[in-house]
Length: 295
Image (tube, rainbow, N blue to C red; front, top):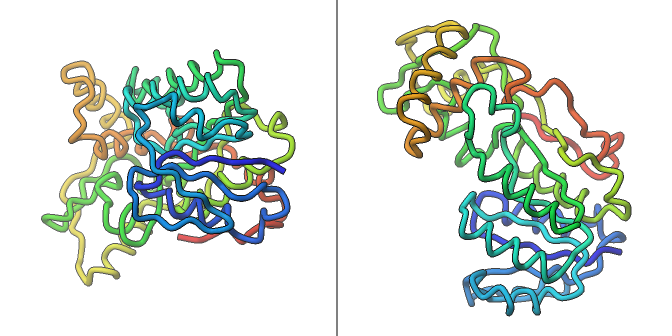
């Protein structure tokens, strides 16, 4: 059985990952309690989760707390300082497996359109592998969470929620690979608890389903009782040229992150948003552990 530590609980994936790890689906593969690092002191430990209040900057103390851990799951934001702390902790703990914060689009595939886009994630995984540990990057496509991504936050699908308009990029039948945060939690738990992590590829592509962009528009309209009006429409080629001009001129601007994702989505399969393969059978063969969600 695997002993598991989770670093970073405050984001979209913290609770779904813990819920999956605590579920009966993987109970016979996990050596409880899970060590969950948190900056807060209001968490109550249970027989399945041991909350450890810690500052990642104190890498020696964190490494001591995680001594003997088989698997480290990292859910931190893409921050060079935080990534540096995690790399030092991994170097000291020497776990059998690290699952870094690579969830979302396939960053490597997006490099052709926007060189260096989220390159910090690629560099981080490279640095971890240099430490001699098994690293599995998990690309999940766009997040889906009813209170947030792909329901409320829909700018990366071309929707301007302030004006209830659509700036369409790409063809009418454009799709995106999407994963609910619950499914992502289960995917991470499955990989983390697997008794033979060496069987996984270095980069794993898993998603709940491929969803037409028009379905996201229709869902937003229904949930908000509004009618979205088409404001503009550009072909995939026009969108690609526009992204190149913006990227060459400005580089990465954090405020335009969702816009970049929309440009990438417009290019279709193979550029990081729409995956050509789904390796879900590696983590959930025949839906043995859970039923995949639907958007």
